[in-house]
Image (tube, rainbow, N blue to C red; front, top):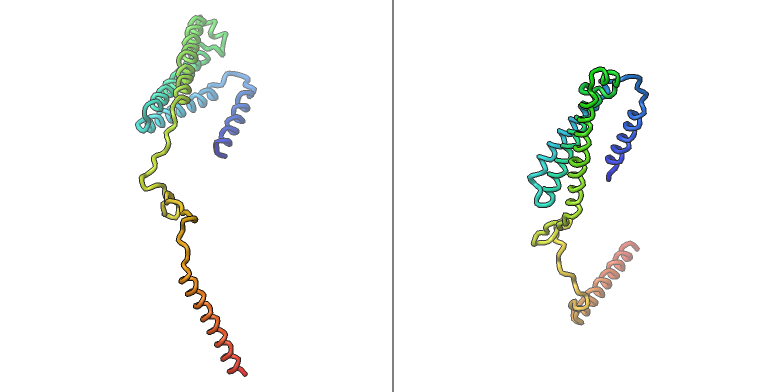
Length: 200
């Protein structure tokens, strides 16, 4: 995980701690409306990302992606049900209004729906998805026939050089190199002698 992911987790944890311990005096529809809209926007982004990546997946990876998407769907539906329980359907955050309108049975029914969506649907699909991902074998990347190329552009699959079987330098080549070196040294000494004679 890079630094961006770590900072995202830290920021999200800080926002969570701040919002969970805010001393609300009364019911705040604005607060729940903002966070509910954010959940919906994030879910739409997840759907868009799933639709974009799904055609490139195969086999177990595609099945795991579909199961994950189904789990997200039921989690969002459960969240929607919680909004109804605590909000304008049964008014669980205003118990006096719930009692006045006789909505206790409706609250119990909605709560049962949320529990089914969370346990049997949302987390069940997510756990099966995690199992399918863990059992999916990793495929090695395809290597071209010509071998991988180095940053310089030369192939990296060249056969190694065996120094023990390398061709040795023949004595003729050695003597030729030695005579050439002596001629160069003799010429340099003659040049130095002429230079000193001219200067003298």
